[in-house]
Length: 140
Image (cartoon, rainbow, N blue to C red; front, side):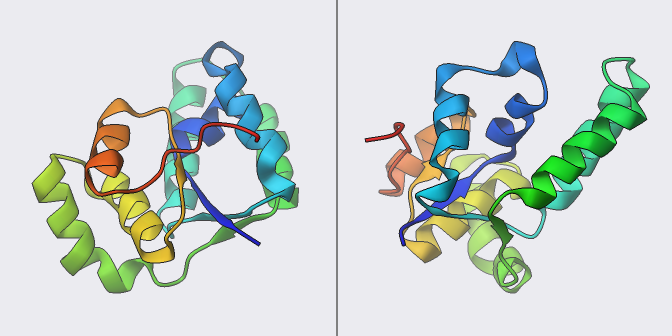
């Protein structure tokens, strides 16, 4: 089965209706056709986005709990090798492409796995293309 790296910008669009698009829906529909992988920082990114949205009154704890349960049921696998590359390849990618270390971790994972990346982040898309990483376009 082919791998697909999914950026948090896509995942959180499944939570926030105003951020959803045909692209993010296509990624969601593709989950059964790809082995979907995320770097080990991903659960922390999800947690941070949820807590910030609660603090800003954009969401509730109950709604977040339902979303967390949904995420647990999806075939998204957390990469256990992310930290081994954090202070080397990931750091260098962040420097070269002016990315956060978090965004660079998605790029590093896609490069290491030879997988396309699904992202809505423009800077990450540009960096991925410069590094020869394919951008997920939707279902074929």
